[in-house]
Image (cartoon, one colour):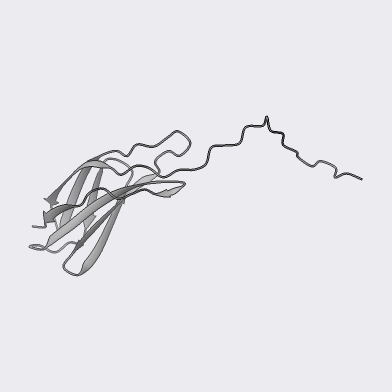
Length: 111
């Protein structure tokens, strides 16, 4: 007795590649932006075709706070920072496999 409509796989069937996380973004540069913001520019993360980039997350730590911003492109504006406070900011890429390693942190004083 067999199962009707059951799917079987042979060793010749190609399985999709596993999902991976991206490398860290490179060349992160931060600057104070308008109206209590920090702007972070960076070179996109490297990834493979099986796990394309779905976005980027920036984390800025300063003044006893963690503040996040997200974007799809190669520039993120992080809002809600306090003027005169120094923030340590990093960026990490995201794929369907998760978040990659954060970039090296850069220091930015909000104005």
